[in-house]
Image (cartoon, one colour):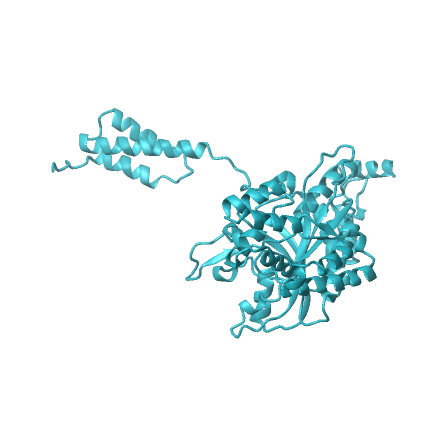
Length: 468
């Protein structure tokens, strides 16, 4: 192999300038290197290396010049006006949670990876995993339910009613028009502990009803089902045990896909027998009220399945409590509701807007589900060393989807005040700065919201006086 000759002092100097140049500094080193290479001041062996180094440097600078500053895909910034809207939504939600006796709770934004995995069915692929951090494999939380269950198990809590508000992350395809993001806020309400059957479940449905009414989003419907009814239905129709979760995930798509497409997925993709899929179709296309529950209790097939009978019996009791709460006109027993998350064990529910208000200046938004939840009696036991179970039921309010509707409505119909200023202090004459500052301090100390604008304050006062 031919040995390369020694580099000249000029070659070493040009290369050193390139290696030591700060990333954001002007490309002076590349210019110098180019001149030395072109001028023949670099010896032939070093010349080839210097030319390659120059080419790499120029390509790197080109990439930097094409960099676009923006928010990551599926995220958004919230300006002052948008924060006012969000705060109004959160205030309505939190006041309802507190009215029902809930305490506040917060958990870390990330958990141990093994805490989150295998809790969400096929949606586990949407979890954001983090690289090894100090010897621990971590992941951003996918929802607030699993962290709550981990909190109960960690602290050996057997009874609790709480609310939990925070951001969660999902690696899915975002849709801004549908209020679906990769980073979004959830508002959860959960009841843990042993209580009389269906009382906590009925309270959760009442909370969803109260919040959606308070936010005045338009007409809505709360769909209700039970995982035990679904599993019993699959069993009597002949679905193999190892395909329950796959078929459940397909059934859950019925609101987004036609029955024909769902059936094709069951038969063509999952390998279900056509007659089994047709049997499922007979059931899951039914929806109604307590009369449908009573009808299915007499069904020749379902009445022979223990799981289905337990689920139907609890739903009948649930409807009795919902009647006492006066909200049954917004409740629909829907056999197609599946909720694909693995941890649900009993009653499940989902609130959908029947139509998004399309007022003047607004465009229709298909935001779909705005609240959901259910019973998860076995989740806490997954984290307890002795497997001790704590029955739980809860709900989650889809803040981002609600925000999409409220934001559009307020921007079209209302002028959004971004501050809560009660008093503006100003003087028509100059040289009163110290007096104004003293007065402002007294007002602040008295708890009064005061703005201390230094420019155009007289104009602002005149504008407000003219408006009043």
